[in-house]
Image (cartoon, rainbow, N blue to C red; front, side, top):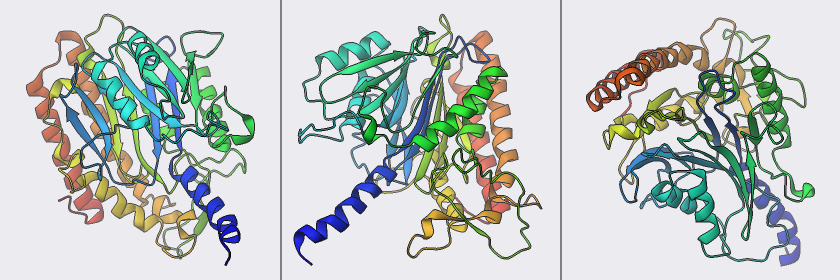
Amino acid sequence: MKLRAFLAVVLPAFLFWTAQSRACTTAVISGKYTVDGRPLLLKHRDTGHLQNKLVYFTDGKYAYIGLVNADDSLAAKVWAGVNSAGFAIMNSASYNLNTGDTTKIKDREGYLMKRALQVCATLADFERLLDTLAKPLGVEANFGVIDAQGGAAYYETSNWSYTKFDANDPRTAPFGYIIRTNYSYTGERENDKGIIRYQTAAELFYRAAQTSNLSYRFLLQDVSRCLYHSLTGTDLAENLPSVKDNPLFVPFRDYIPRYFSASTVVIQGVKKGESPDLATMWTVLGFPLTSVAIPVWVAGGDMLPSILKADYPQNAPLCSAALNLKSRCFPMKRGNGKYYLNWPALLNREGEGILQKLRPVENAVLEKAEAYLSRWRNRGIRKDEIRAFYTAVEKSVRNSYRQLFGIEMR
């Protein structure tokens, strides 16, 4: 095959795979519109790096917790995180900001977010960082940011400039939230990616806003695990199949959760005047449909739950367990099998699907965390109680995966 013909076939396929594996569904919500008055960040992460972990860092002005690729030996790039000042950041890749830009440097988003967590306490600090970093930045992304002063905004950022979208400005966000998938409003329309996922999220957020339900649980359980498809109208949470039937495969493309979904992070900030120690990073490590959310706090220091972390080159036990269960949902390994979900393995009429079994496990974790947070908001957070919470939750989650699925977390 001649080189030109080869590239005509292979290059578009490679670019399609790259776009699919670096796609995310994200949102920023002003605390003025959430159920408890605290701002929220959502990052539903789609990536080819399916093994993720959490890392506690003390290499900057502020300590911070970051979501990191397990194969990043130096933990040099962070894909979402929160620091001891209550500053939090995440991103979604954009594919329409650097159109026509021939700059060689690229894929620097993870480095930029790590630097922001090291040195930023406020949105103003982040803007100064963007202003002063050498150009070209090597990025093409929508950065979502919140801080402990009530700030909540997106920054659509190219190699050379950025545009701020303020979630506290009713002209920009009339219902207090902004959604971004894989395109930017300031970019070129013909290169938009993630339009179907955007529309799905837009419908979910609009209903939640109208019913005063913009909460961290809504983001974790209703958005990140939404099985409704806005283009086809298909909802895999309805008219469930029987587990007693043979495996039933359904197309699984352009839902918010997808084969390349690797984690979900919801960062719940603090009200103005609250201690930034209370900023909570609710983390679903691994495939979101087969994992559970566990909250972490920077104030707990380096004693993160062991199922969420790992020394290189090991993998985080919860992430590996979630990927183990994911393989039951996608047992077809050849060809395009990754785009066909074994529906009854996930949800079925008998209530024996993976997602159905995990929901009570996760709810127990969230309820326990909410009880601790209520106490801490009244009298201050305590490190010994964070340790007690981590120990109890880790034991419960380990036991649940063993008893429900026969999976040992090692």
